[in-house]
Image (cartoon, rainbow, N blue to C red):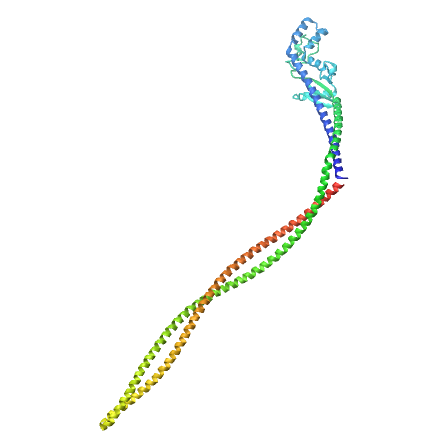
Length: 505
């Protein structure tokens, strides 16, 4: 069966159920209200009878009439007219008379019964005796309602009231107007107390009219609900025909969308799984790179330390080279002084050589002159020979010293050249050491910068690792969400299939 037919059928069934429920509820409510109205009607009648009883009592005149009748009929034989006159002044009699009037016209039955009735027709039945006992046992009870055998009966107790003149007929026999213990109408006085429960008023109403009214109302409601239900079915068919078509079209679109969502969720799931795998590989690569950069950082740190150490050593070497250069300069100056001194010595030796030569000439001349002197000149000749020998030895020594000084001068000159060459080499060494020191400084600075850069790279790698881990977690969450989306898509597809089956029948 198609969905539209099911809706119409449901509406029809609902209408029938609602109609039957409305009929049942209305019938029950009308029946209940009818019974309540019957009770209220009976209560109103009984209240009116009590009001009449009170009204008659307030009018008075009963005692005067009793005295008048006793004076008029001393033998106690009252004619019917006189008895009727007395009864009209009795409050309870007026209530009873009014209760019976128009009872058939007003569709109720009035009943009076007492435990000790003065009239036979007021003798209670077995059920009425139970009512009397109930009121006697419960003085606070002022009313009882009974629904039995198609009749609703409202009972109210009648209690004696001295104020209303009840004791004139039911009081102590000694108060008899005839002096014989009987009341004015000739009934024995019972010596009852004020407030005694004497009898009961009962108003009975048949429920047949209520049932008939409820049945008529039920038939009317059923007819109207049937017509309204038929109208609702026609209107419902006209109203739902177009929306159902649109709903079927929406279901078809929803089916297509569900298929697309399922395919998309599968693609997202595959992509998220790929991203997860790539993130895991990237995390491993980043971890390896981080370890490598830590090793490089350690090497750079060691290079930086070595560069600083080389820088310090170069600085120390530079200082020592400067000291060496200064010492070489001092040595050069000393050698120049030695060279100058050698020249002076050479000059002095030349002078000595000249002196020795001249001395030798003088000694030679002296020897010649000594020879000329003969014997007298022999001593002087010996001295002249000694002087000439000393002069020759001085000349020889001077030559040797001159030769030594020349050799020393040559060696000093050679040493001077060597010192100059050493000074130049030391200058080059100092320059090289300064360059090396500067280079070491640059290397140290570059190593520090490299160390800082590698630290930044390590920080970046750490951040990348965190991001990669976050991406992996996000990818896993996306994967989980994709799986959930896929499951939801399957559920939606199942629901759409069920809707399609429901709509198609």
